[in-house]
Length: 333
Image (cartoon, rainbow, N blue to C red; front, side, top):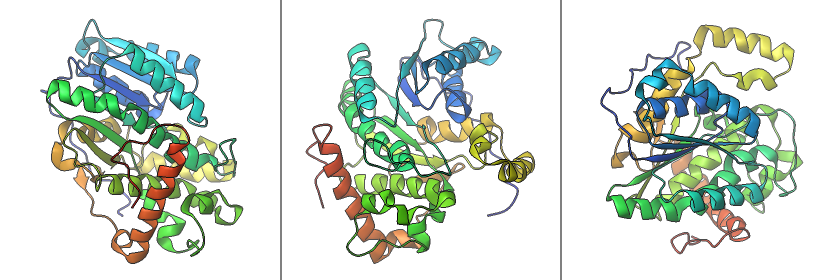
């Protein structure tokens, strides 16, 4: 990967999202906030900021609505609402989905953007390691809970709805893909990542993004995208506060690299919306780096990659069945 990132062209000027409803998770800062702003600039009718901290979400909402570009482009009747979503807690995910479905009759776009990158291992009351829970498992539960609304909206409008994951090229650094922490023959995928032995602080974010991609790739074997188009994107290195979790001796050099290499959040927003609203049905099941489709690494096609993908799918089916009715198409393989 070159040190300097390639330039990214702005979005087409003729995009209008009037009449559409979107959810953006992790919308109180960084890329999430920018996605909300750019949706409003393109006249989306309803957008929900799904955030863990409602007060911080309200501050982000106020700042977004104060932008001149948003005032210029937004629908004067647009609904911009902040709703609580704590991805560490399955109960909060379920409450959010229930409340949203009761209040809003349609959903055209689900942006699964919430994510964390931490350096300390933490096992949550769900029994899962925190990064895996927040970045992967809770996103899957939210997707499944809202999937009926997405399919119903597609049926009503005659146009496919969208699910877009914020992914990362860092999935290639996963301890599974590199073989540095291989999956034992007797282990489960989720059990492996919950174990202390698998913990590698600087690859755990990549581990979680690998799981998201594996799930998406397998889901395309069960759903052809005729009703709901699902894809993922990597925005590249972006100048956000994500590095703030690093200790000072690491934060300083990382911030120096960011100063030279990182993109601004508005460019990251172009990458996100290109994947979410510009590319068409051909993007179903695809991973985009910047605005280009990236072919899966050879590991995904290997016998081990295929084995892990199917194992993860089956384990995820069992996990989700504890909290919601798993749809008929989500069969074990």
